[in-house]
Amino acid sequence: MEQRKEIVRLPQIYDCDGRISEKDDWFIEFYVRNPKTDRMQRFKKYKGINKFHTHNERLQAAKERKEYWTGKLKAGWTPFNDGSVIYEDSIGFQTAIKNYRKLKSKNGTFRFYASKYIDFKRAELEPSSISTYTSRLRIFDAWLEGQQLNGTDVSCITNQVMVDFSWHIINNVELSRTTVQNYQNLLKEVFDHVRKERKQFPNPCFELPMTRRVNDSAALPIQEMDIPVFKKKISKEDSQLWMACQFVYYCFLRPRKELRFLKIGDIDFGRSVVRVRSANAKTDITRVVTVPDVFMKELRQVYKLHTFPRDFYVIGKKRLPGPECVSYNNMGNRFADFRKELYMPKEYVMYSWKHTGNGRAALKGIPMRDLQGQNGHTTVQMTEVYIKNINGMRSDKIISEFPPL
Image (tube, rainbow, N blue to C red; front, side, top):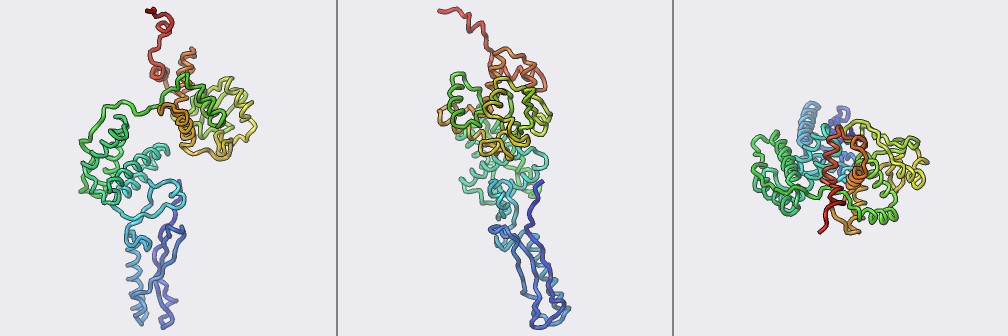
């Protein structure tokens, strides 16, 4: 778990070892981390203490001032924000978090409560789910900014505001029914979390509009005529990405987790298998997938993966195997750039190579039992449904023997 930085060091009394001469000024000292410098900054407060000239009077005054400043700091006051509660912003962008979990003001905004909600859920959800939740909450917060509501108290987010946002993601963003429901359910959870602190706050997520739209750009298998176009372009200009596409196509590895965290040592070059460790697998169960000969030959002769240290990530930074893996969306963004440049459908994503490999393998006659193991599905029936969704009810008889007009 990430170690949080110390933000406040509470007040202490400095009493000059009990001396009360005119040269000996007592003071209250405390430290607060400066969000601009990321360093603890010292503050001294003399007011209301040194006007007393007996030890007991001065000590009593110092204790009162210490209590005063302690109360302000515990309530969230900071000298850098002039009286507002401070908190760590969990839905801020990652670059800002790495620099320093910036101190934010306005303790009643949606962003404040969304940050607290994300921190609450962090212990029980996978990082990928946290990333999805954070992304959706950022989108809602950005929409609130467009409505000039992001800096207002959360009580300003009424049912009508939620209705307007729902119509926005239905009509303008054109999300599917399932995705719209996911947004609405997440926001309802956040506002339920607000109600734990503010009992009188009414959850604004009720009687929200819905769409009948079934799909919002779900990944599609890549059509036969488009495969050689992608291969020619990507293999020439980004050979590492083309290798990644092949891992997804041949081995059915999921790009964002299974492939991203794959190491050289996970590949058995002699037995032509890849071990997907349980920590990286979707089902949390270690599985072994087969590497087809045509791809293994390329891994050895073209990419020479067997020559790299075994603890290196296969898809490393600098477009070579290395000690650091690429970021969560790296491969997907690189593929999307090629897709846009080639004017290909937006439904083509990195995951499309998995659908493509499955569909072509099934048409080639590879048994469902083999495809089940390669995919890591729990049952053959699950694989059959998956393949049916990819290839549809294709009939070789209709293709080859349908009577002509």
